[in-house]
Image 1 (spheres, each protein chain N blue to C red):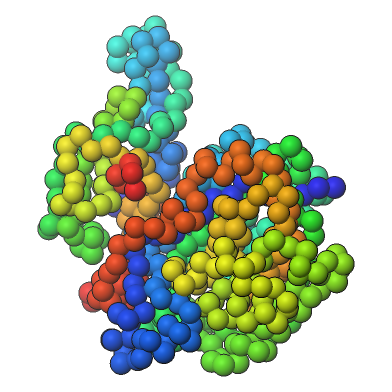
Image 2 (cartoon, rainbow over the protein chains, first blue to last red):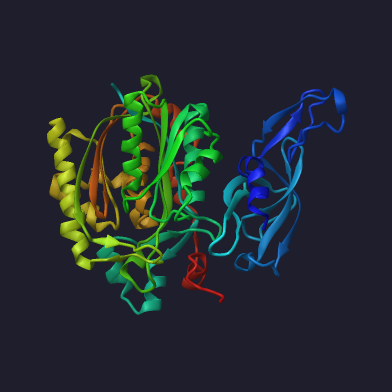
Length: 132
Length: 349
């Protein structure tokens, strides 16, 4: 998992899907950018909190997990397109047999991982099917 | 001055284990347990859920219901006996996740099953003194029961958040008064570093639960000059179904008064969330003008009693977040092995 300061710097975007939006062209950015890739120096970047709803663009089901995630197999890892446009990779909590591309999802607050029994617990956003 | 509940939110994990499933592991009589405890199944947290994630989900639902600016919140207090960290507040995690930081105070509360209502009382004090505008009080737990212990049949997971304020136009329910009854009674405890609590068996009943619940409730009724018949609903801490039913009868409340808030048969004892869950389930169906009498109990031991009157605003906010009945429907049932994995009772090394 990330180092403590590295995780701490991203708490806003991990907990609350805080990103940015360019007021010049209207594009949304997640993770947050402080510079618009379209408008460049004429862009006006402002903080934006995403609604937390979107749909699954693609997914995979993990059966052989990395260290620290063994207890969660099989679990779903998906690329989610937020309704505002940006895409992100996240775990989706749900039945792997019912997951499908195009499924509507909403954000929830969960544990992302932890540094062993004595280390820091990393919290943040995962997704669940929207109707659950 | 009028103090009350601006909004509330509840959260219950989706997994359940039935009493039969636990009983068959330990060779116990499931039917005797179900009729004795009046508990049929209990909620189980997902592998990635703990008291902090439950507190956040409940607090977020309370914020959705209220529609208030989170920067108005001057205090976040989370009561739990399963805070994920021994040192590092759960309440800062909640405050960050609901956007209330940084101009506010936060702390964690612990008083067995009544830490959530203790947080409500603290917020009432800060709000009424004018120190803060709004206070978020939460009771959330992923409670522990040792394998094979009687507690394993009821120790469940869930949480409730209450946003406390004093602007009359914002209040969904007015808290007319509160009263507490507290003694040093060692009926239940968990020592530092120990994974499971221990308890005094039958001693938790009369000297613990019933003495404190009845004295707390009687104290508030006498203070206000009210009678059980003056209330439309009643909620008593629900470690099982039997205790609150017996306490209600002793005090003169009817089954009809406690029925809407008695959620323990379906989800078990959510500890710091228990009494607040009953209040939330009652607010889910109460009409403007209805009166609710509630008494929380925490081992160790103490009780917090509340007299609540529902306002017109309840109708405006109620449907903006899931009701308790919606949260507990459509559960996923798991067997004991998976339950043990979810609760960290199985260790790989």
